[in-house]
Length: 162
Image 1 (cartoon, rainbow, N blue to C red):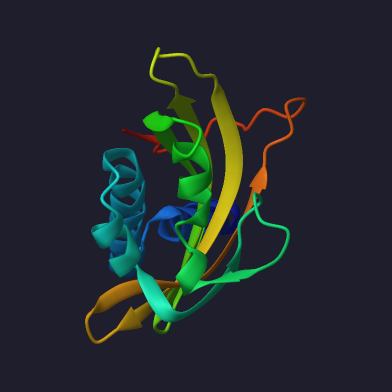
Image 2: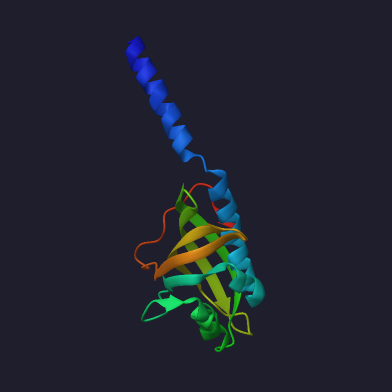
């Protein structure tokens, strides 16, 4: 009986330890919020600074992977239609830090509205790989996908809203 209690206690402690974010993960999650705030305020200078010069990623709005020189193309597609990011919420799914890398996975629900205030929320799944550089964390790679309407994202603990 005592051995069982010890095993259960150790299992509980291990699960609590794994659930905690590292300082690197916490820093990168703050940058994910900055990323979306930059999109919302259309601060493309700050937005571009988040990206590593050797970035390669595949946004779901693109037919092929893109390099850093195309990172605002998807924003331009929205603004060319007269749309602005009105609101967004991030729901972290997972993150992992190792060495000088942090990988984030999350659901983003964003509402892009026209000048009359019309727009519907859309949810996508996003992953970014952040690299620690001498000047701070930068996005080295990423990918996004539309969340199928038939499969709403589950509620996640620690939901971050903006």
